[in-house]
Structure formats: C-alpha cells, structure tokens
Length: 195
Image (cartoon, rainbow, N blue to C red; front, side, top):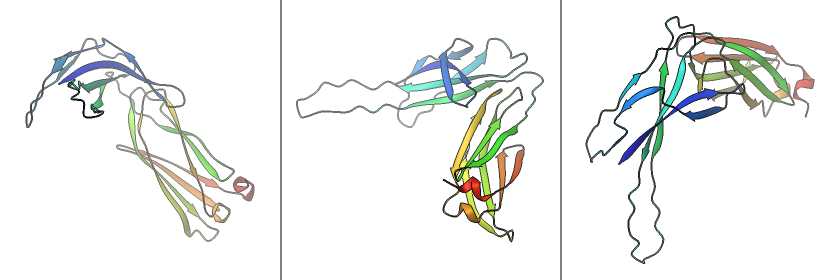
C-alpha cells in the first residue's frame, strides 16, 4: 500500500534541498495497492507550463506499513519505503548554463563552488580532481559524486588534498554533466597547504 504526496523542490544558495507541499501538478491515483509481481501506472500532468524558469517538484511515493497486533513475543519494527521522483516542468526557451564560481585551496582543502545561472536544472555526474607535481606527473586524483543543481542554485564541494598536498603544484578540476563539462586549473603554493 503506497500513497503519493507532491512537494515543490527548491535549493538555497548553498545547494541545500528544501520541499514545500504543493498542488502544482495533477497526479493520479493518490494511493494504490501494488500486489507482489505487479506493476501499476502513476500518471502525472501539469496544470500550467513554466514560463521563464523551470519548476521542479518531487513526487514522494510512501509505503504505508501494515499495523499488526502484538502477540506478546517482544518488540516489532515496521520498515516503510519512501522515495521521491523528480519532476521538472521546463520553459519553452530552456537555457542550460553552468559555471565554477569559486575554486580555492585553504589549509590543504580544495573548495569548489558550482553554480547554475541557467533557467533549467542539470545533474553533475562527477567532479574529477587531478593534482600534478613540478614535473607534471599525476600524484593525486579524486572523484567527487554530484547531484542535481536547480536553476539559480550553487553548491559547495570540498575535499582534502591529503596525504601530499605540499607536493602538488597544479590542480586540474573537471566538473562533468551529461551534456557538457566545466574545467578550471589552479597553481598551488606552500601556504595553501599549511594547517
């Protein structure tokens, strides 16, 4: 037994997700029973198109656990599943844009801020960081997993450059999305690695 609840999805300037209950979409059914080895269809439609900026929603599907009478043989725990389906209502003139608004190293930690100045979301598949020594030999590599970045939002990604920050002279940063990528290079000095 599952029930559906719709929330408008937004992100603040640090990229933190927030959800507000919404009636912005039409969806049916509102609750359903899915028998073992069975599939059910959930239909979703828009009430009004997005005009200038994409509208993002999460349609949460929540399992309603069955309440069973205790038989006196100890405590019982009911586990319920809840997941949110992303739904995007795109404007007619979609503009996908991304930017690296900050890339710095302080106290041996790399901080990268990725921003979305476009009017539709994009999904960051990974952020690859490669460190090179004075001979351009690769001495450090790290992959950071990404997430959705909604229109107008920014998100900070941080990673320590251990164990050999002092040996890194150049950092190459590549932010990969499905349709495009962004890159940035940084020259490191010893004071950036000092604790």
